[in-house]
Length: 110
Length: 201
Image (tube, rainbow over all chains, first blue to last red):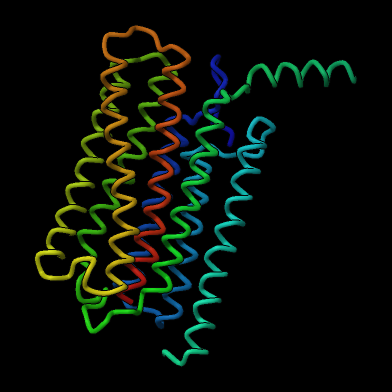
């Protein structure tokens, strides 16, 4: 991010420009997500895939422009902790869904 | 050559030093991520367990959710402007932006509580079905976080009052709340996508 700069106290923080960029992209992605659902233009599964992708992109936009995550060395441990957390949450959610789906099929509850 | 690299690295280290306080707070946020991940997993399992009660399509008002989303997104960028003022040592502007952020956050909370009270008044409280229990737990936990963030923000507005220069300790507090506030906005992206929008498809 070219317009991020570092001041005497050290912490990396954004500029007005980078915040505005992140804000405009977020607004566009949010409006797109609401628009896709309200317009009923895709099939249900297509709509779910579309809004899931829009959410994932918007999370990355927030991480980069608002939380100032980057690949620089002083952020290495922040990024490592974040990647570990994403993996944990992935295992948690996918594991839960898999086990509960399997259970309900074996118990013939749906 | 080697000398230059070492000098650069030392220089970079000095310039980019991040406070251990901020890193510690980042680790706390990661554990909070796991709490929300768990609640999202619960909601995903329960999202079709209506027990004969209303579905998301019947009770969710997308216009209200859209306004809540706009308020939270706006409050994210106003807090960002506040942080820029803080780094430039413009404390009047910092307090102004924090005040605007506080009002936007309060507006969000007001909308959410109004939605909750309408649902409970119509008999669609958390005791109606597993779907609604999971919904109130997940969205309520997010709302509780926003409430804590607002209290913290009010305290910081008072603490920065009458100061002319920010201590490193105060800058760290402001940075931690900035991470917290932006993190809540990220959780809200998942809430409006996977709870509200997916329920009305």
